[in-house]
Image (cartoon, rainbow, N blue to C red; front, side):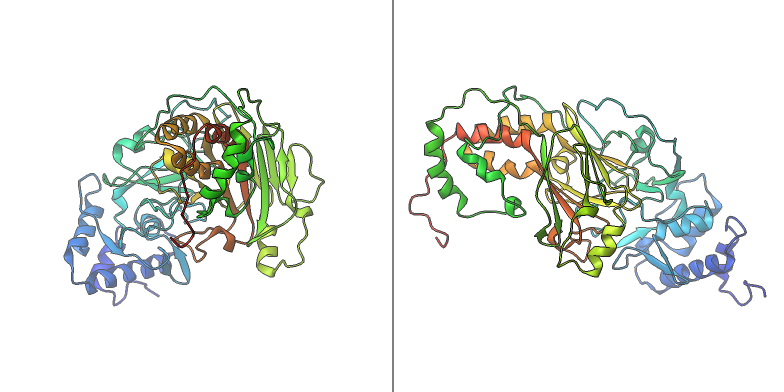
Length: 458
């Protein structure tokens, strides 16, 4: 049977530029769907069939964007298969071997109602193999944002939208063979790398690094501030009044010298809104959190050992996908996360979000095999010094940066069905002790605001 019999002339013409001989029926359905969408719409400012024909027939020339409306989940279904629209049409007309996988860094972009599918507005970056760890950079480091901030980007293996200048400067990334990047000049440039990428659209250089380091000691009245979870990141209307009473006791201790915390972080494991098991105190600079059942040692936490009588089928299924889990690495400059599992993990780090100009509550998607900088000590130290100049309230506010939240398999936020991390099946809260100790020392030296006469309803 000839697939081109009785086709719309535009469809037949566009199929003439199809690359490869495989999946002709799928390509036909994809092109037919595209042409119908473009012919139905009234607004011609989003590109026409003629614009697409010009782009395909003049691959070396400048061409207009050709867009289609964005679906609710940002994907397009063709013959019972869903994929990102720009991936689908790059496969049809440029690279037949491209795949739309779960490794896409930015699969959802709520800020734009249109998606450009012009295959010549993207280019493929050849990826190198896995690289050895390199010393952490001084001012700009890796991040894998796929968040509620939603920069306009996605990955195939890693599929990113980049500016032309940014694309040229990006280092290699990812376990996958190739990636595609958009040539659109107006899009923020983000992408993940297997070891350490450079952020290309903006860099932060922290100054005024704190040299005094304080312990999160039970002797300090403000230490109790850092022990609550998951409410530790929530606004507490009563905290400031309570803190005033604690501060009076703090003034009498005059902590002049502070030792480093005995463990650099504590890790709490949650299923939905319930903590499972006791907090894990991490002493080793490198720790693995996985889904297996071996007894947890100093450098390994096995979540498979933990039981929960309230565990449902969704949680059980998610736990089965944790697998090799994640690896956390603490250096003098930062904390890094390596995703060792076969599924994505989702990270919310206010420190990393500030570093890369994301919204404070942005959730970053870390594909399998990718590394993300989740905390920059120098950046935090500079921010703490600045906050101390502005008073007690500002110092207290950056305490939220000392907590990093991570969900296995399931994302949360504005672009996901789950709006809060407590709705995800399996997640971790990582409490970083060193920055909390710095903040604890700073709070003990500042006068809390006067809350006399202030109540929760005033």
